[in-house]
Image 1 (cartoon, rainbow, N blue to C red):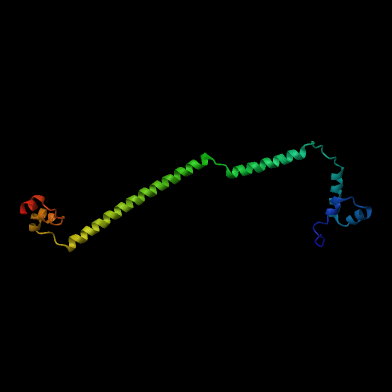
Image 2 (cartoon, rainbow, N blue to C red):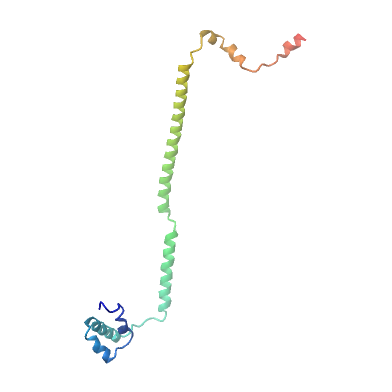
Length: 153
């Protein structure tokens, strides 16, 4: 059997063997057993099949294909809703965390700026604080006094 091709038993299934071919099978017990099995199967009568057998088989195959396609693209709210809820919770948590981090970063930057200013600039003198209103008015744009201009002309 090692030297024979793997399909050497195929002629046993396809046709009836002649007497000489059957005598040659005695030397090979595995093929003789195959020939007897083929003969026994040939004696079994064909099972009655309904006239619409092919149509029923094709309909069953088509139904399985439709179910396979539907199961691939079928939306299930029972599966989708928990995933959306978890994703939303993660995004909200991340957004709040980022917002708090930004607020703390701004506070820290302000604190550092104030600390640098406190170290580098001396505090204002008491005289400067006494005349603070006048100093603030000096920074504002001057408006012409209409009454004073009219009195001068």
